[in-house]
Image (cartoon, rainbow, N blue to C red):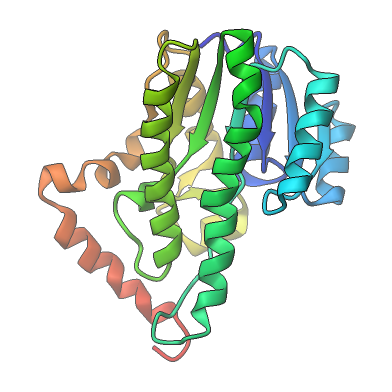
Length: 252
């Protein structure tokens, strides 16, 4: 992918990985549009010269309005990044967890599907373009305190594979970004010292995106242990290690 001349819509890019990805595309010479719910954070990005659109990935009508606004201002849009997501703890022994599960599915999986659906006809119509879906290392190696998050990210992976197969021959590529734990703030870094630093992660991601042809999966070095745990025979051991984190759930 030529990252110097893209027009990229980063849906869910008001903070964290999405925000930095948009900035990296702009720094490389591309145009970025960031969508999200937080008007205050969108204003900060607008002050940097990045176009923004306020919308809610859980609301189908909001997605339709965002699509119309983005394509009106950027008819040459060629890249859509489905970055929106939530990470919620769930205690499966507590029936109240179903609320977190529903929110996670609606945002992470159904939101991804709706966003892709909103822009598929446009990208097919122009004969070229790229969807960048965002799964997670947790989709391949579950983190037990976040069961539905893991399930939705595994679902995004499967959906990306099927989407790629269905769009074959249209000129539209599907690239799956598979992040490990990334420290997007100093607080995150303090909570998880093993998390990758944001700049280092983004350096790897932009390097992988620049490969021609772009890999089907963007796998930074730090996520390889998650992605290939079953193949490498380390899956059971690693899940057992990660299950120790269940102690962070209230009452455990």
